[in-house]
Length: 293
Length: 285
Image (tube, rainbow over all chains, first blue to last red; front, side, top):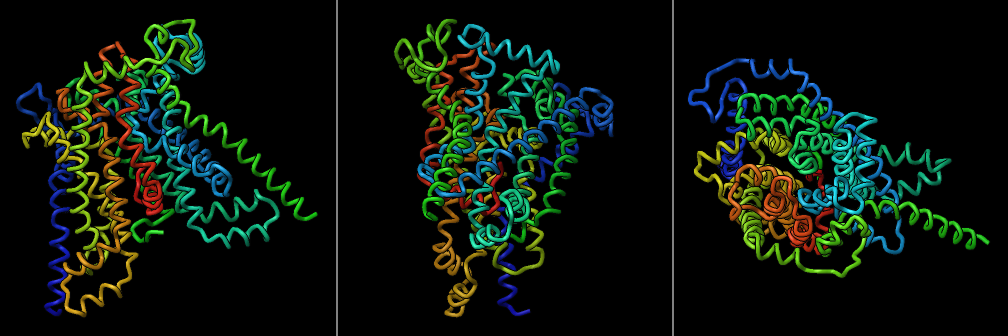
């Protein structure tokens, strides 16, 4: 090994050092702390936390509320992902061809994603759950009770969170897929037009396979953000646990009840879901080798 | 004949496109429109059961905006947001340029796995981390200050920017760098004088996204800060204008609109960079 080569390796680590230090101190350490806390009965209300083993996990897994929250979390992520993909793909295909006013439409459609979610969510809350004294509250109230009666209490809240996330996410996926379509050489599409019998066939045989990496990335990001959704649910239900997802339950346990141990265990129970999503991503598409298109 | 048919087909397909886009654009823009209408309406009309919710009948007023500026810390929140976003973004982008270059260009054992690790780190959601990070913030003595956010935001900004910049650095041909190295430049000189100027679009992209992520961040800002004077704009608006069951709806909407103006301006001006960031496959939904 030449001294030049050795210097280069030293430099590589030197340049990486700030990143590693940051990730070590402010990421690895908290994660470790969380794992430790999940095995203890740590709480700010108590001086000496003691080790309780898998007790916190056992309690969650035996608690029907956890399974309800887990079902809602998975259901929410799945429903929003499918809807986002359908809407986003439709939008991307429509916008892929030039037409008058395309730039403006593009700007408008991208806005929900760029806009701070925590404040645009207020607009939705105002629209979907207005105070009883407003002009359209009678109509929305009737709708809410109809939905809640038909599907069970909390269904309206679930619907409103789902709608909001579709609104915001389809904007993102649409632009992502449009960028994907634009990065595919147009000759491929021209050739496909000559070779295929129908637009439908062309869509399944050419467009979808070519867009696969982008679709995979979209699905993955949508699933992870869906699993870990906390802020949106919190805001759209005004901080009330009308229907539980894992994120809000953990927040409530920790900040509301001061039970850091059980809350950590609950947060960490999200990890299997995230890993499953990651596995799907890596099967479909290998991000670390990708170059900028 | 042929041109007539193709013209007819073109019109048909345009009509098809517009007819499909119209409901979508309505769905996309309606919440914003409704927010604007609400923010300019008098309370009397807002809470009048007989009024029409979708436009203003009794004249637009600025009372809700006045309340925002006079009765709340809105200006302070905006300053806090700006300060946090600028500090966290600049620190993160500098750190990420170094790390991204190292991972993209310098050959050393484990470069590949470090790259993957950085990507995976970025995917760890704040829902998982807000709890232990709030402890870290307390131990560092930063609880309830904007410093807490400046320290914690890089935890998601650095992995993201590193990932993004790694991709950009890889698109720069190695030969350009090798020329400089052969001419006697050191690695750092090459990075500074040759690679960075060529990576400017990538760096702008990283800055834009980091700024947006900082500005829009909600979970940490909500958890770590309780004093009104230290809140960021998006948290201040939502937490101080909702008091228990009382919603200051007009001002809430006014705040929601004003708090996002910096982001909307940046986004309209630099739309192309946003899109190129997305293609780089580095942005979370």
